[in-house]
Amino acid sequence: MSQQNISNKYYLEPHKAICKVLQNIKFNYRFNNEHKDYWKTLKDKYKGNRGFIIGNGPSLISSDLDKIKDEISIASNKISLIFGETSWRPNFFTVADPLVWKKISNNIHDDIDIVHIPTTLSGDSNKKTIYWKHGLSSPFGRFSKNAERKLYGGQTITFQNIQIAAHLGLNPIYLIGCDHFYAGEKNVIANQAIIQGSEQTHFSKEYRSAGEIVMSAPIHEMNFSFNQARKFLRKENIQIYNATRGGHLEIFERVDLDKVILNELTY
Image 1: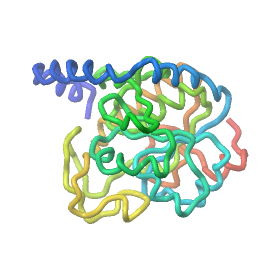
Image 2: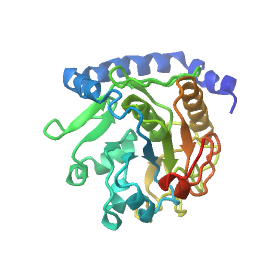
Image 3: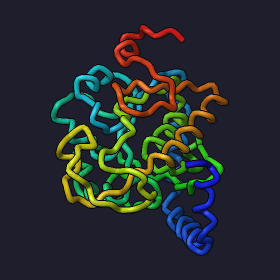
């Protein structure tokens, strides 16, 4: 999808865009000083350290996670389904998908101490939930490396996780388990609920069930977001690489995960 085509969807129905902006302003009141101070303490905390962003694609395996258990990592959504197979745990956990959040929010704190979500979702005030201020996606591309202000949506939680990694000062950033392909989904519309088919689209068969209502994965718009991330990080001299075993994400330079783990890469 070209940038012009992506732009068109923002201007065809301006009344809906206005309603979305007003709703977003309302939601952003959830981002109070407690949350702002939390992100402030993390700004560039890991500057100069490498970090890993974990995708939930079919290529993700527990043995790889064990190999990075002493590294800084960010993971999302139903990653806890793999906890029984690994001693690894993410340093940061995020959710932005409203349907995923509805399904896991009641029990997620059994496995995760601190949960990070956008202001578009509603967390349990009695448990440790940290908001980030949700910035609306744009046809012109937006990226933030300052979570004290906001993080932008991009049709995939990996996009917000890249922004969090930049906020933390991580450099280089490695992606693993980001297969960037959802069997059974083709030319889907963004922000649309669809019915999950029988294909396995994640690392666990338990991740989604056939007939389950899930959010679509619009690959073209995800590509747009990833390209914006690559462009921004390049200007900031932050290196990002795709260390996924296989998959379809070719926007970021590929590296061999085994060599990454063994520090055998030269740049």
